[in-house]
Image (cartoon, rainbow, N blue to C red; front, side, top):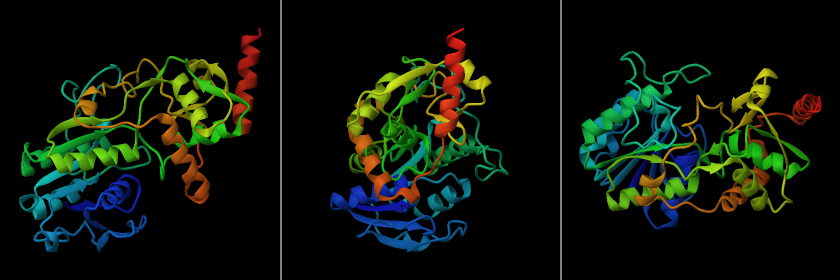
Length: 338
C-alpha cells in the first residue's frame, strides 16, 4: 500500500510508519518535524497544518490509506477537505477520553455514551489538564464520518498506549520501580483493574485496518488485568524476583497527597474507585474480534526497558520518588500497627 501518515515523528505515528516500512509499504509522513524524525526509508513532507492548503499538494499522490492522530479540529478538517475524496481508507486515532461515563466497567464503543462535540470556538485541548481533549476528538470523529463516509473510515478510540518511546511517565514508572527492587508501594487492592495497549500492537492493528478496509468505531485497547498481574508481569519481563508489594488503601494515599494516574508525586496507572472504575476496564472483545493482536506483557516490558536504557534522556521522570515512597510506606505501616 501507499500510506500517508499525518504525523509519524513520535510514538504511535512513528510506530505505524516503522511497521509499515518493515512490511514493505510505501510510507509518506506529513508533519512539522519538530517533535522528532521519521523512520529511515519514509518520505518526509514538512507541512504546517495550520495552513488550510498545506496538504493539497499531496492529493494526487494516489494514497491507499491515511492515518491521522491529530487532536486539533481544524487540522482534521483541513486534511479531510484536501484528501478525503482521493484515498481509499481513512483511520483516525481517537481516545477513550471521548466517553461520558468512566464509572461503569465492561462498556464498548457500541453502547457507551460519549461527550458532546467541542464548542465551535474550541479548536484543541487547552491548559495543563488538556481541557476539551475528549470533546475535540468527538468533533473530529464526526467530521471523519461525515466527510469520508462510514464505509471507508475506521475510528480507533485508543486507551492508554504503552511501550517503546512512551512520552509519558505511566508505564515507564513501573518498569523503573520494579527494576530498583525493595519494598514496592502498590496502590489500592491487588484485584483492581488495569488496561492498556502496546504501541506496536496498536500500530499493527491500524495497518490491518487499512489493508482490510476495516470500518466502524472500536476501542483500541487490550484486555484488562488485575494490578497484581500487571506488577507480576513487569517483574517477569525484567527477569527480576517477584516484587515485595505493600498494598496501600486508596483513601490513605489521597489523604497523604499521593496523586492519581500521572505526574509529580503520583502513582501512575492508579485511579480512584468506584468513580473511575470503567476507565481501565473496558470490554476489549470487539477489538480482538476485529483483528487486534495483543502480545504478552513481558514482551512489552522488555521493549520499554530496552528503550529506556538506550535513550535515558527521553524518559519522563514522574511518579513517587524513592524518598516520598518510603515515607508513605512508613506512615502506612504505623497506621496498620496501631
